[in-house]
Image (cartoon, rainbow, N blue to C red; front, side):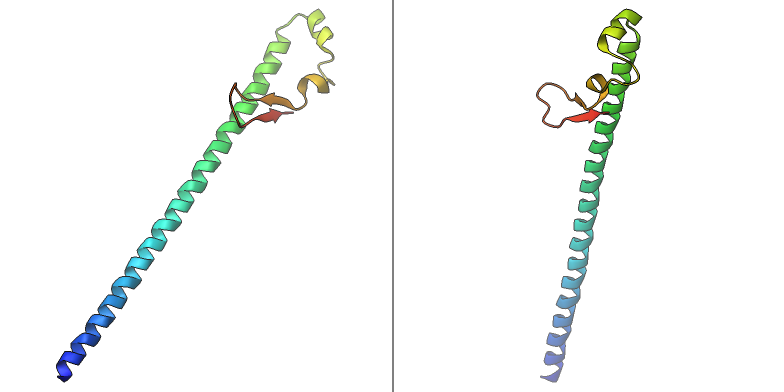
Length: 101
């Protein structure tokens, strides 16, 4: 009878160890998935920032390709907040917009 009680205690400890290992595995998996989620959001922000910078470069390139008389009609190249400040960047139907300044 004593040997049977000893075995029951052994299985209780074994189940406790299995539950602890499973809990650590789930915790590691959850932490990894949260890190991948954060990385995906950071990558999207990086792409959005790059596209905003590219849009600003193309706007300046377009303005500089115009003749000087037409550029004067747009205003000064050096101090023209109406043209360069907070220009919205985003496609049609795009819910996320940004601006270059």
